[in-house]
Length: 312
View 1 (cartoon, rainbow, N blue to C red):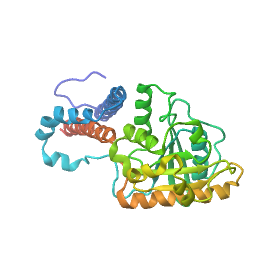
View 2: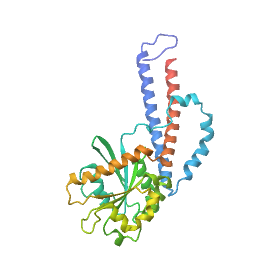
View 3: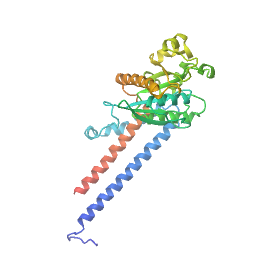
């Protein structure tokens, strides 16, 4: 129907519906733009194996714009997407030279068998409810070995952190108790150093070294015996990991119930770690929060203006 000036409009409701439809379309576009920008930021970060300077550079570049924003405006909008106070979920990242052993530990933690699945190129997330606890296990590809290139190793490290968002409560460095000393000329301290070079030295207090027995023959019967023999030179790594070391028997020949007992013991240890220090917040996740929050604030201002215009 044609609209005429200075005449009552019988299509008021239809016009208002059209305005709402335009608003919804505009919001959809802004959300798509937000997702695209965050994806671009992740790709840029993945190009660098050492990215500690990137968040600092971003903070410097955006510092003036943040200072210009009013405190009243930011008080209405939360500056963090992540709940740090109540965090009932347990989030773990598994890393180790043997992905098959990591898979055995994954099954023991979650209480079900995922078969022979082994992540080849990308990190994989597994979730389950164990004793009324939501448990997320991020299984990584060969981050500590030679099969991944530098760029892919850096990207998958960041992906594993992202999958454990808002941050892992523990990094489980999984080391077999048999054959590893013969196959790899690498000590436990060297494996730990590689892990920290990927996720940051600040993560040392979040590392739990797990010696996993998957072959009963020649395996250690107790952690004290393993430490006394200084298997893989573990004594040199103790000061770095805060003496957080466990020994579990997760041999595939054992029943799932028996293996789950070992898994629950590790989960209880992670619960204690969570109670002491919460989750690990990498600079990548912190920067991602800042980008998302800034975009949310900008979009909220646009939406508020649109709603105000509709009221007039």
